[in-house]
Length: 173
Image (cartoon, rainbow, N blue to C red; front, side):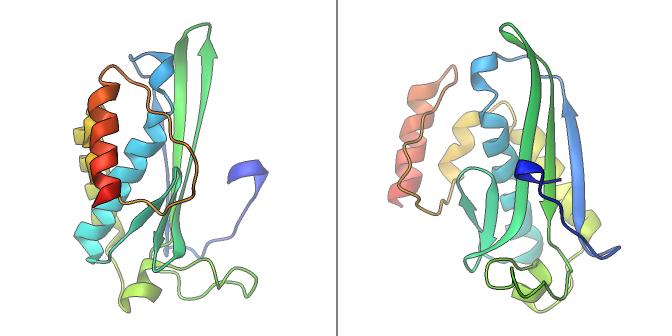
């Protein structure tokens, strides 16, 4: 399911829908960064596997040519000041060949943007490799390529000064 309980249909064998169950050991103040780290990881994997240029539409969508190809939803259960568990779900439109008319102007797949099929298993593998490399190194946010939304961004983690500077540099590039 997506945000606000939205649902969707996906042709069998065409796309990727994966969920990670996480039991983080870091402060509850930093849990909001999990979605960003997942977005960074999936974006890197898409660029690596498909060679398509991607952008992160803050904080939970990835777009190619201004069309959404990835949605990320992270939910958690907390006790006082610690996280019991988090669930991060990722949906990637990989080899879908068409979309309903009502969303075809705003949604796409890697196949439709590239013009050829993309290896789903390799895309999952690369996404997880990048996630494992980046999950505790929030300073990797310098690689963010965002779609401006005019929203104020708050960075919260142990080394927030470094992260903020890296994000400023990435946005200025």
